[in-house]
Length: 362
Image (cartoon, helix red, strand yellow):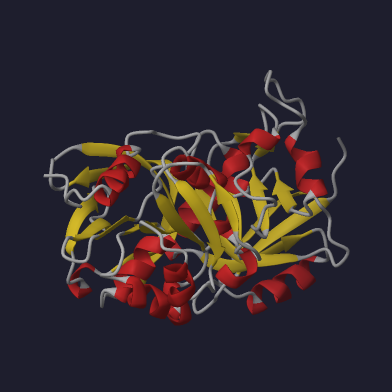
């Protein structure tokens, strides 16, 4: 396949060459914050995870697209990422599940890509200098470089209002009722909840009074994109629910719950994006292999809640428990599919909490 030359430029001036692929925007330039993902499989789930809104995903695994795409693997109705960076994009998928190839999927969803990039060099640069805004495209190199200098990262950005559901919907038929805030909720997350509860998924802007009117047995706070420090309007509604109803948060939901409990967050240098992060449950000593996708973390020193889980790579807070308030949360993704299932027990823990048992595992 003949492709147009494309160039990738980071805000610090680092330049990488490649070829244009996927959707080709008329202006020839795509901007966003560059992050890298270390997962060996699950590229469709990664691309369709709403938590990547505003970001450009660079895959460290060199061969992407080799098993095609299927609607069964979508985590949202459309991808919200700004673009993807790939070393080798396969155009001949081989899988009995495949309903098509990855590149037509990217084109249909208007996701630009750049292929043939030295993604090992790009990853090493982002590890050394942190996640960086930048640009890529098939436009003139000067135009791409100029766009890179103007590109914005995710600091101070509210992408939740963009990706959240515009209307309420229900899933599952369990005895207990859970209201799930959609800050960018993944389909697999909804499925895991629906296997255990009657779930009402509500827009992120839903108020605490509106939630109480639904008389839920518990509240779930989902994953989502952007800077938690810019989401005070959502935190205030969570604050009003703390202590009134059991709460379980994942990823951004963990950060918002921590903030509602008086904690604070900070941005990690290059975030955690992948399906192989070791996390220790401090109450049992058990080590889980986890899937993660976040650029921000909770400051342990700011927490009044008990830290329940730690990342063994860098010591970052990966979970917390506020027993008196009947709340708990984790930074990682126990629902991950594909991905390790070591942490699926957390959904059972939420179910036990709604049955009146302690939120702690010990």
